Image 1: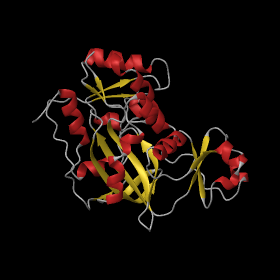
Image 2: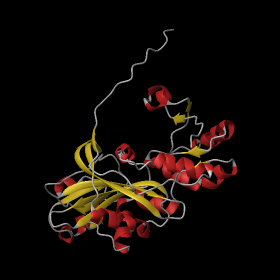
Image 3: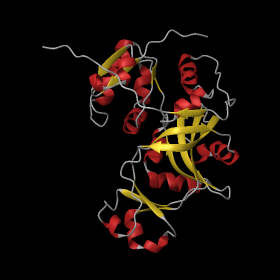
Image 4: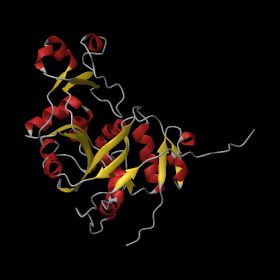
Length: 298
């Protein structure tokens, strides 16, 4: 069934956004950490009769998850997980603790302050990450404790650094909290935290882990993803969960897991076509492209 769709985009600086160039209409909004952000979106959604609002970056998930009922009152569904699931996913230490509590394998993690107090608490290679970081920004593979001493002790988490094949698993969770499908892809090449070369693969150990993901984050809904290492002996360690579309989602979509269509079906009250029948062995090779704009001269 075809739906008449109009795509609206909201950005801090729409004129500098390549994505906004592909939208039917664009709107400038305050920064997502400002007090006026949610109110600005509510006003736009009510005026434009928006049926579905899809956040795409981590910092906006928290404010929007808290405002779901306000948007529902004006007829807008927000594609966001419950606030507690968003909070856990945004905090790498809380994520590790929640995964371990649910019996899901995860590398041991400590707050940097606690690790510096007892450096022998983690054995083998380690990696340090901002506790709420994304896109691989700020990640350090320290060669000594001196490289960690200058970091904010409560702002970083230190984890065991596992070696093996790295995967992202794109997951779709329906409104009943059921994992409908999970699409792992091997991260063959990564640039600035985003996969530039990837291939879909039905990794049984990752599919099994995906089925249990909502045990750790029971409020997870809609599109999400997690990253994992599969070691040579077949063991797996999940080390990050994102409660949003992952940067490599286009590969899952091309393989047949049409999360975007399923969200639209949910918002429109249509029967769901969500399925786990996606194609293995689809290869994605990314490249840079440019959009050129000639601005009017004064």
